[in-house]
Image 1 (tube, rainbow, N blue to C red):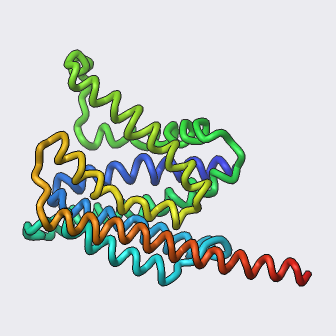
Image 2: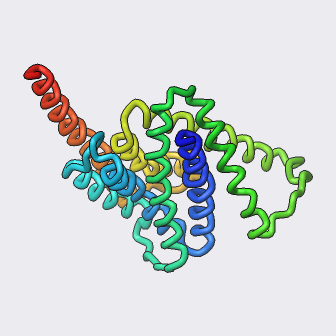
Image 3: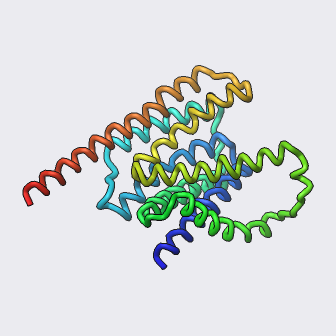
Length: 249
């Protein structure tokens, strides 16, 4: 029953609430605001992990320094000289999305310890996520229209979102959580603006400005490297202490 509750919570947080909050936030506030606020997810992941699972990973100074560096870079990449216009409802929803993603990360870490295959765990999580998402259809005026899938572009977008951005990403994320731990895996979210800048230039032809380049290199990449290096150093210290303790025993 406890395992099933974990899957239910993961479906509610990581599938239903996260996507609803993020997408609704985009209708009320600027995309740049959402990208910066949602990028705080690693901080909430680390904080919640420290709060509820203190015995496994610690929230060290290295992570905080990497977080500050990454946020500075993400700000340069996202705003790129534009003004930030605050919208309370949209910004709060984006912040809520970052928090529930932190909750999902903790739950997915727990699921990794159950011993189930990753694909089976992901499928089980999506099952509950879809169940929780169904009531939202009636709240937002959804009307089924199968004719939309006659358009090859719509069909391709749905297949990409379902297979690539959802199934493959969640399986990969669950594997990373199991292998690296919640804190170390979460810092790679800082690379999302970097990848966005690269693909927006290659596919959309958007120019790479000096601010976005500085933000990409000096912020996001440094944030990932600093967080991982200092977190790994801290974990190595803990492992040495455990080994010494075991030798003494």
